[in-house]
Image 1 (cartoon, helix red, strand yellow):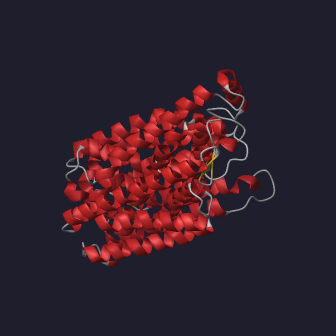
Image 2 (cartoon, rainbow, N blue to C red):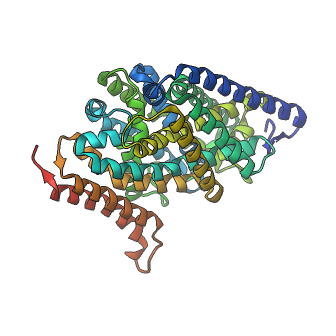
Image 3 (cartoon, rainbow, N blue to C red):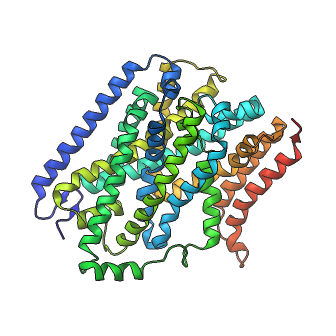
Length: 469
């Protein structure tokens, strides 16, 4: 073992590495402040703050998509789930890639019907009533996603520096909330591509060194034994085909009809660019998914790991000189996802208070600040990344996936039926995630049944309210 980080101290190199890590984090924070200040100066109006005046290239949009998707809740949470899921942890990103592929045929139409946010798209498809419902439900669900990013960032910080969870969460929330309210979409797009490259490189380096170092006993034979003893890919006792089906419904569909995905697409310079960026992002996610699955399995072999499991792996296999770089890579991916999610949620909420009008920069910045504070409070109460993430995504998926895809297919429905479908679908999905297991063989699957029912009932309500073009 090259040296083990334990709450900010490296065995054998405590003082030197602590100072290096502290300096690296300070430099990183200064860099973010500089980017935020420069971006704030460039932002002159609401279109610039919300969608960077719709001038982004395919590379910029694809990089932003990848950086947003490879957020702390996805990477860190998936690796943390290795003990339960094993290699099946790869499905989190594979399902995300599948969701993006499903979006490609609809990307052009979505771009043409959207403006800033998903509720804008919903209004253009169905009218103002469904838009209001969307503007109420999405910020509630997406604040949970922001909380998941804070949890992930806090777990990283408490692993690399001697801070408790509460302090780490407050610092993390303050950094990306301030960064987001200062520069808006300009600052996000300027850093997302580099952050996506950094996190992919970081994951690849960790995996390469893990293979080189081997398992706990050292060598490739040892790592082979570690992989063989872990829950298998694609399915195992803890992850069945039915679990995959539910993951596609509650997680994968948010990549086809999610507000963050659309907010990235709406920054593209035209519809063709938006479609191309989605295809590029989907292709990138596939190999990354298997790297994440490998790290999830490898992490199971590390007994007594504290904080984020992926940092424990890095500590176990990397030379000490690389640890600060990996820490910054992981923090980058958390922040790149957190700021996008926070901006999407806040813009939707703010435009609802302005009744669809653009408003002003001061108002949206205040909304971002308040939204960040609420997400921080949630993160201080709930500390399970994947649980928090999937709860929020399940509510959104049950409420919006069917109505959004219904409209993008060119089908119509009466506004009151669309609003009812959103409310009933979201309520059933929430009940499915919160419902405890009931007695009996069927009762044990009550939550799963409610989750599936959310999509079925949603579609039935839309079908009843369907109107001709």
